[in-house]
Length: 425
Image 1: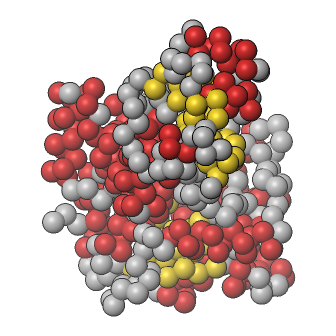
Image 2: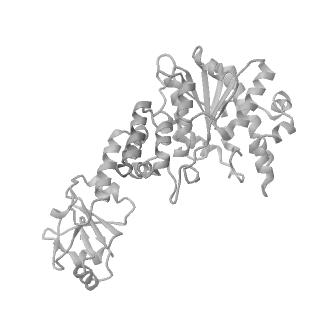
Image 3: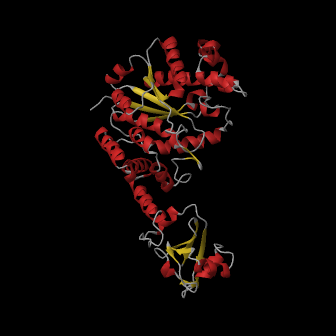
């Protein structure tokens, strides 16, 4: 079994680290932390690399701390940002912290007998400190020249908007977080993305000056796609871990659609699959890329981690509905899978008469056709499908008996325009 440093190195999750960090990780279990910015009530897939880093730390026997920035979240980290964020209220931050905690509990064991994970909120100490004490005891250890050299600050100074004093102070506040965690929990390691390197080294320097102790930092590369796009960004926006913001089906599809050039890298970073399994999937991708075996493994593993294995099964059933060939009767009998597949399609709730309703009337009622006469023309031209089967009879009746699971009927016009009918009793 590899040590965690070698594990991170093999998985491509090692960009920079302080001198001696590998030896520290090989010794007695240490305490390490990662910060999460509560700008929303949910994490997104861009945060998953950070979550997995903390989870791996625990799996290798070390003590993980997730610090949720209830204090710093009211200011905002300028790292990687081209402009200042909208400041959040304390109530918004509190709600966001609660949502993030719930998601972290899926990855971290908070009841482990020896190295239980902790979640702490830096509002516990930042919310009580007075500004004069902070400037006297902490601020005096940071020269402006030192802060200007940090990439997150320098990049913003080059922009048209510049950087406010509020965000400029973020580096000092995060350094103070590291000091507090060192004092309270003997925390000697901070991890994160490479954009956090300046903030991490600032904390290491503060602890050295005030406590005369050596601490460490380790960061991984920021994730981008093979085409150079920032990971996790789609045409529809961010892909969230919250099933309300991004359904488990769309979450599964996001990973399933991974480019061949990225899939092995993602398997290393976003799953706990062992080296042998990933190397076998790499060979399969090389030999039979059209089978997309690696993408299916990736989608299953990550969806199971975030949403549970039951949602994987539902997502795969939904995919069989959505991607069934035309005139291939939908074999799925689970209406929930159909509704998941067509979550973005317009829908109508309606009761059907016992004897059924004329298909042309149904099409006009749900406005898939402008009128009964247009619906007739569409059926005659072969442009209407009921539950994926082409409709051939303009006088056909549709009843509850035609509904999948007695609850759902999928109408389609042409190749892309769908409408879901939810059948009421």
